[in-house]
Length: 306
Image 1 (tube, one colour):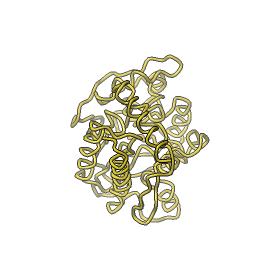
Image 2 (cartoon, helix red, strand yellow):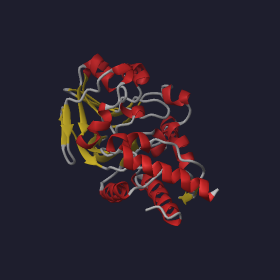
Image 3 (cartoon, one colour):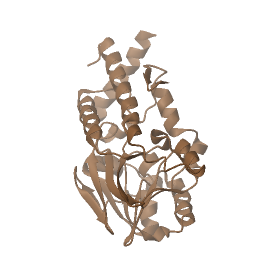
C-alpha cells in the first residue's frame, strides 16, 4: 500500500513540474487518494476526502438554491447549498462575489430578486479563486448585467482557461495584492492568499449593523492540494500567517461549510442574536486547513518526497 501511494504522489509531482502554473488550479482540485492523513481539530476528525466532500456536497447540493438571506449589514447570501455567492448592496449598484458554475447563474439571479434587488444592478463582479465551481459563470453574469469583472493578477492565466461552451473569460480589471475595490461607500480590500490557487483572494470589508462596526473576512479556500511542492508550501505558509493577522468579527468562505452557514442560518431563523457575528470562530477553518497542510507535509517527508 505504501509503495502504491508513493507512486501516486510521484506521478502527481511530475504533473505539477511538467505542466506548470497554468495547470495549477486544476491540480488543486484533484481529489485526495484516500482517507489519509487524518487530523483532529476542535474535537472533530478530518481527512482530505472528508473536507472535499464537506465543501462540495453532492451535484444536487452544488446546484440547489439555499434560502437567500441577509448575513450582516449590506452583505447577503445568494449562493447554493455548497457553493457560496455573496451580494454586497450599495446605493450606487451592487457587487457580486463568486458566480459559481455557469448553470447556477439563474439560481443566483433568482435569489437576488427574491431579496428585493435587481440582478441588472450588479456593477462589479469579483471572485475568490480560479476554479470553475467559483468563477465559471463570470461570462454569463457579465452578459446579463454588464458588470465590470475584476480578478487577482496571479489567477488571470487560470481564469483565461475557464471557457464554458467556448466563452472567453471576461477580465476588465486586473487587481494586485492590497488593492481596494470601492462602490457606493463600500470598500473591499483584496488580500493575496495563494496556495489553493496562485491568485486565491481573501476579501475584507467593514460593515455597519445596528449601530456597530464589524470586520468581515471572506476567506478564499486554504485547502491544500495532493502534492506540496516547495513553491506551493511557501505560498501556504505565507497565507496562513496573513489570514491569522486579519481583524475578524464575521468570517465567511467560498464554501458555506467553511463557516457553518447552515447551522448559523438555523439559529437565525430561531430568533437568536446574529450568529454570523462570531469572532471566536474566525480561525476555525484556518486551524483545520493548516493542520491538514502540516499532516500532508509530514507524509511527504516520511515518503521521501521533497
